[in-house]
Length: 318
Image (cartoon, rainbow, N blue to C red; front, top):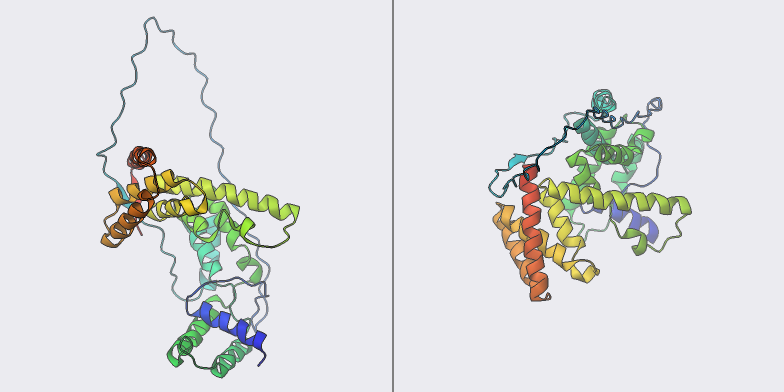
């Protein structure tokens, strides 16, 4: 077997074992007749009704200032994301998920997008799956590719094939578009997933000649990334808050004050001993490289963030 073939096979094995995911541009096919093309009709945000135009009453005296509401002790409602695990094969759930999504059900859109993303890179046919098994059997057993791990990889390759059997390739390729639209319509789950699989910095990190159209698309994704991550953080998503800590760390040349502020907010809101210990260590490392003035600004910013979260009234834990 050529070295290049072994490299590709090694990547497939690592993906099967859960080290990473990837979405190669290969055609999805089964040994049965290909399903008819499926084109999703993406729901759109409903326009807000125009406010009624009523004449404002004339005030004879100065209006009293609005009383400032204290949200510091407001309890948070713990919310969870929709369950994405489906029983049986994905194909049997498609009609229901698509119909609900097209009718504006954002939970269905999130579940549909996540499950379609799991079908990238699956074997194209049963014969292709069998060839994959043969290639795994030919792999040299190493410290990483042990017999047990390779057996697990073959089982996952099989599970993924049968789970995605009958799902049209053109529908699988719409997974990101569905997720992006669902996030744009306000789904906190979809927004959190979106910022987990995209990066605001990758155009500069990849040495690749982007076209003008691709550059514009990347600019849109970057704008959405920052908008979604701030919104989900303010809705109490600890995952998004931790992401805000990461993307604002000093070594990335960003905003250490904001990084520390979100980290302190997590310390205030988390009920996980592991996360508390981790974020305490992060705070210590950040503060060691910051001025007293920056630390003071971060504490003030943290109180502001917590106030916004408590005003919104929700929290999403890991």
